[in-house]
Amino acid sequence: RQGYEDPHWQYPAAGYRDDYTYQSHQWQPVAWQDDSDLRQGELYGKSASRRDHHYYRGYHPNLATIPAGQDRMQTYDPYKGRHGSAARPEWAGGALSSNLEEASGQPQKPSLLQQYRDSGLSSSSYELSQYIHDGADQYDPVLPGTWSPGPTVSTPAPMVPLKFPLPHVVVCFAAGGQLVLVSPHRPAEGQLAHVELHSLEVILHGTKELEELQAFPGPLAREDLHKVDVLTFCQQKIAMSCDLSTQRGRDSALLWKYLVLLCRQNGSVMGSDTAELLLQDCRRQKYKRQPPTANLTDEEWAARQPGTLDLITGEVPPVVETQAQVVEKFTKLLYHGRKKDALVWAMRNELWGHALFLSSKMDPRTYSWVLTGFTSTLATNDPLQTLFQLMSGRIPQAALCCGDATWGDWRPHLAVMLSNKAGDVELNHRAIVTMGDTLAGKGAVEAAHFCYLMADIPFGYFGVKADRMALLGSSHRQAFARFASTEAIQRMEILEYCQQLQQPKSFLLPFQVYKLLYASRLADCGLPAQAFQYCEQIAATLLGQDPASHPVLAQQVMKLAERLKLSDPLLLEMPEQDQMLEPDWLVQLRACCREWEVR
Image 1 (cartoon, rainbow, N blue to C red):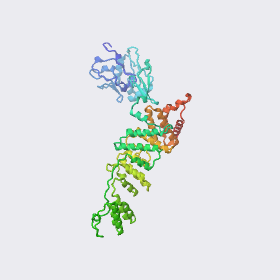
Image 2 (cartoon, one colour):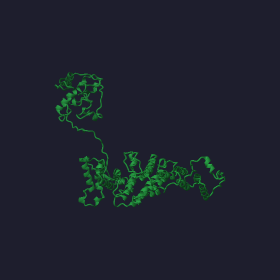
Image 3 (spheres, rainbow, N blue to C red):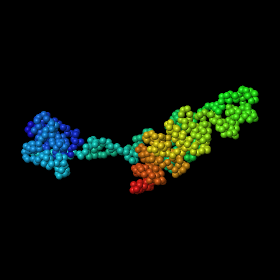
Image 4 (cartoon, rainbow, N blue to C red):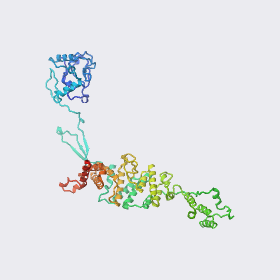
C-alpha cells in the first residue's frame, strides 16, 4: 500500500505450531492508536481455526470498519463463537464475508461464523471436524491472499523450547570412582569434543570423610587382615576421638576398649573381665557410713551406751575402746542369756558378723531385723547396697536411679552385678536391662548400649523404635543421617568381626544393609575396589541364608556390584580374554533375583 513505511516482514506472523506457552515472550497484545498505523498482514483464513485462542498482531480486513480510537486487537472466543476486539463489536457473518471479498477482489468462501451457523454445530465441534477432515499433516502454513512479498526462506522452529540456550559444562559421576567433565564445545561447528576424567580420591584428598574411610582396615572379613590392624584402629579412636574429660567421652572410650578386649580374647569375655574393664577408669568415691537404724527407740539406745548404770547387774560398764573388750562384753551378755542385748551391742559396735550369725540361729524376724540394721549403715549409692539388694531377690535401686549426679558413676554398680551372677539368672538379666533403659532415658546412649551388650540384647532396625539398639553407640531415635554415621558403622563391623573370631559363621543380619550403605560411600569417595569387596561379603551372607527373606537388599547389592565389577583387583591378574567373566557369587545372586521376579 502506498504510504506504508515499515516492511511487513518485520512483523512475523503466527505459525501453525505457535502456542501461548511458546509465544508469550514474542507476541504481545497491541492497541492500534489510529488508522495511520494500520499495517497490512495476513488475511484471516483457514489457519484461524487452529489459532482461535491466540492474540494476533497484524492487519485484518475488517479492522477498517472499526472506528479510530478503539482497540483493534483481534481475539476469538471459542465459547461464544465470534471474533471481537477489546471493544467487542458484534459482526454478522455476512458483513465479514463481504469485507473479505472486497479486500481480496475475488469471491471468498463463507466465513467460519457463517459455516458454524449453517452446520448447526458449535464452534469447537466444527473446528474439530474440519481438522480431522483436512488432516494435521497436510496443513499449508501459507495463507491465501492476493498480495505476496515474494519467496521467503523460513527456519523451522523447534518443537519445544531449548533447555540450555548456550553450551555449558556437563558433569557426572562414573562408577569407577571418577568425575566425568564435558567441556562446553560445539562439535556441530567443527570444535572437537573435550572430555576430562578426574579421580574422586584425588579431588577429595585431605577431607575428613575420605581420611575416615581410608583409616579403617575394612572389609574385616578378608583373609589378609590381621587383628593387630583392628586393635591399632580402636586405640587410635580412643586417643583421637574420645574426650575423656566428659562423661560421654568416657562412655564412648569404654565401648572401644570393650572391642579391644573382645578382639584380644577372640570374642570370649567373662563377667570378671568386663568388671575389671569397668573399674579401670572409674572415679574412686568414698561412700559415707551411717549409724545403724535398727528398730530401737532412743531410750533403748541410751540405756545401752557406755557409762550408763546397768539396772540388772547394778554396775556401770566402762567405756569400751578396744575390739577385744567389745567382744568380751558381747560374750558376757550371752553368759547371762541376754541374746537381744548382745545383738544390739554387736550392731552398735559394728560386730556384724557376730550379730548376723547369732540372729540367723534365732527366729526369721530377728534375722531380718539385724539384716535391715546392717544395710542401713551403707550409703544409698554404695555398690554393696546394689549387691545385697540383688542377692535379696530385688531389682537394685541403682538400676532405677543411676545416671544422676547424686548417684555418682554407674560403672561400679554394673561391675558388682556382672561379677556376682549367682542365683536367679533372670533377675540379673532384668536388672542390667533396667539399668540400660535408665541410662538411655537420660541421654547416655553409649553407656546404655554397653549395658545392653552385657545383657545380650539383639540388634534391631532403624524403623522399629521399640528396639533398644540398631547400631552400636548410636541412637536410632534421631535422624538417619546422624544415626548412620561412618564411625558407628565401623564400630559395628568390628563387633561383628570379634564375634566371628569365636564363631566363624556368625553374622549380624540387620547390619548388612549398613554395609551396603558404607560400600556406597566408598564408591562415592573414589574407593571402588573396597566397595566391591563389601558387596562380595554381603552377597556371601545372603546366599548362605535364605536370600528370599531380603529381596530388596539382594537386588541393590547386585546393582552396585554390576557397576563396580570392573574395579575388582582380581581382573588385573586374569588373562585378557577372561576379563569379562563375572565372579561366581555375582552370577548366583543375579539368578536368585531373577527367580524372585518370576515368583
